Structure formats: structure tokens, C-alpha cells
Length: 143
Ligand SMILES: Nc1ncnc2c1ncn2[C@@H]1O[C@H](COP(=O)(O)OP(=O)(O)O)[C@@H](O)[C@H]1O
Ligand SMILES: [Mg+2]
Image: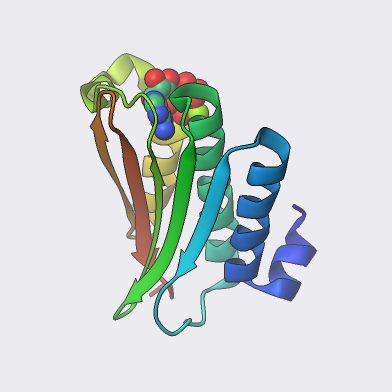
């Protein structure tokens, strides 16, 4: 999805669209749940959050063999949270501690670094044969 569309329809709608496209294209049930009142998010943060959510969904398609995906978007005070949960294979999140993966600049490492620069983070929970839940979060307005 190109940036003008994202800015026109807003982040919630754009991520909802991404969820629908994922379901149509890959035949995986992909639901979006929105929680709480929406907040104004800085334009460049919207782009970053959209890209990260897209990467999380691509990871589910590529690695998880899941049947269901739930994308949850919520706010707590000044922080926006986007969680992508799947019921797929899961993985050993300790591989993320291996520095040799860091160089690629994309995927979960790149995400973590880019979010850190705006005061955000990535929280990975995964259980083998149960599924994976990855939550990205960051303050909605840059200081
Ligand atoms: N939803 C998921 N289900 C299972 N494994 C995952 C999931 N997301 C990430 N992974 C694992 O974490 C690794 C790192 O992901 P990522 O940094 O995006 O790199 P890439 O997708 O290029 O392999 C993947 O190779 C995969 O083993
Ligand atoms: Mg990836």
C-alpha cells in the first residue's frame, strides 16, 4: 500500500485492509480487532508501524503455517500497541539474541532497531506448536 493511501484512510483502516488482503491472498483467517479510542499518530510513525505490521504478517505467512491470525490494535495512554498473534509452529525466540542475524537491517532486528529510535519496542512471545505473539509499541507522538 502506498503512503498517500495510508495517510488518507488512516492507520487503523490501512492495517484492516492489510488483514483482509492477507486473508484473501493466502486463505488464512485474519481478523483485526480495534480497541479503545484512536489517537493522532505522527505521520512518519504511521508509515513505520504499517511497515512493521506488514513484516509481521509476512512472517506468519512465510514461517508459521498458521490457520488463524489476529491483529489487535490498542492504545494505553500515549502508546500505541499492535499485536499480531498466530496459531502456527512457533519458534525459539532465543535465536533473536544471536548478533549474527543483526546485519540484515530487515525483519525483526531491523524492526526492533527502528522502533527503538522512536522510543518503541518489539515484544516476542512464542511457543513451539502453539503459536507466536509479537507486539510492537511506541509513543504516538515524537517528543
Ligand atoms: N510468526 C512466526 N512463526 C514462526 N516463526 C517465526 C515467526 N516470525 C518469525 N519467525 C522466525 O524468526 C526468524 C526471524 O524473522 P525475520 O527477522 O523476519 O527474518 P526472515 O523472515 O527474513 O527469516 C524467522 O526466520 C523465523 O524462524
Ligand atoms: Mg521476515
